[in-house]
View 1 (cartoon, rainbow, N blue to C red):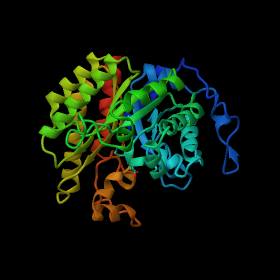
View 2 (cartoon, helix red, strand yellow; view 1 turned 45 degrees about the vertical axis):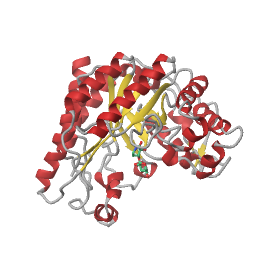
View 3 (cartoon, rainbow, N blue to C red; view 1 turned 90 degrees about the horizontal axis):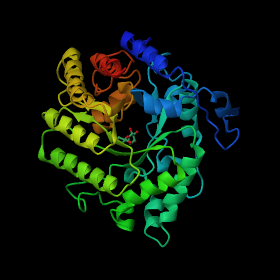
View 4 (tube, rainbow, N blue to C red; view 1 turned 180 degrees about the vertical axis):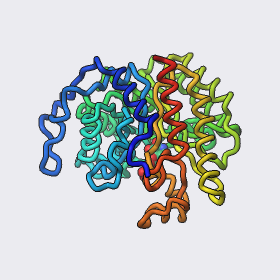
Length: 393
Ligand code: XIL
């Protein structure tokens, strides 16, 4: 069982610490002491946090987490998160998690993740300011009313000012491309219907006004495979970035979600490499933001299944990591027991929710299995990150 980080992971951590040793920063929150469960959390975590420099200088190794996973008694073996220097709230940064009801903002969960990251010198990426799927219904309705943009403005203001010095990078717009049912390849969403496709540009400009130093991202899925839909989506994302850059929109980073899927056939490795080159030529950084692998055939031996998952991750990382503008790789979770992919079928869902968890039946698409034992995918991800760091050092 994986009670300790793998050797590669320890090396990663050491390398990161060497790379960021000279960095100082702060988390002046502008909100004074915040209280969580009777304890103030942010002030203690202050001072040594290397946020901005880390974002610019290092190749970051990231993971999405939820607050329950970092609580004492969560079952997470100590040290397992140590190698990660980029933490992404898996769910608790979404608008519907923050402001489910109008005007009542619930920051505690996000705060807890920020405090945890700060206590470990890890950077936090905010995810996501605008994402249709996690937009509260009252916002969806309100956007098309007169003055609807004020909802976006107030939400951005609440998030970007509260986390001004503690969250240096934000997904501003998540999943806005749709080449099948979109309008000019842009997803029909409540934002798009209320403000037209220009909402993306407006969102970035609004975010930049409020967060002059933050690194601002778009983040997109469905870009990996050799099929006409993914090909069209790659193309549509390139055209979007091209339009935004031509209009001087403050876009700094393009996030590639990388939810790999073994039912989708061949990875378009050459096309992915070319796609990354084109993005780089438009002067954006690139981030692999949500790496995981959905299995197709769960009938083989565990070794065979884990090998297939690891090989897919390896092939994908090989294709993108050539590109020096790729500055981070994050997996969408750490252990299979917490993976959103279990929701994809009733059997994997129940395998992850029974006690003890059923590691065999569940989807095995993250670096650690349901009992936190490292799988071949852990070595692939750690190895890819380590070799990239050595190459760029
Ligand atoms: C998923 C989370 O993992 C789930 O917990 C949540 O219920 C739904 O969202 N693309 C994204 C992520 O950008 O925010 C999604 O995360 C996965 C797909």
